[in-house]
Length: 149
Image (tube, rainbow, N blue to C red; front, side, top):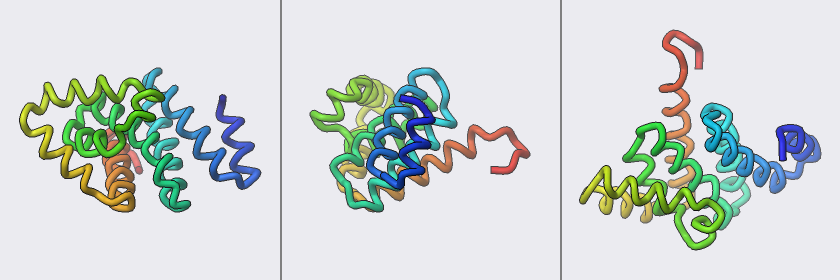
């Protein structure tokens, strides 16, 4: 799967395939340290899934985002998102979610549970908005100072 596959899906107007490819690319990008493209692909997939009402598949990009936010040191947003996104399917497809939860529990201690519960109680729309806001914040933090966003 590559960015040309994504372009073909975008050109065809098939937003499901576009979203699926974006999720797959983001997972690869996270694994290889390509943070900014991963954030772009996650934002695309989260936006498309939310717009289409595809709440089951929405958890996949959220699981990847939570792991990425953890890597970026954004522990509270990662904990807010990860339990919302974590289920058997996401744990099988994205095993890094299990590791992320364990690391967050260790890093945040007792605070983890209250943060995670706050995320779990969000609606799909609220979680999508929150995730997209966190992507914007992460992008801003990654941008060199003085560079336009």
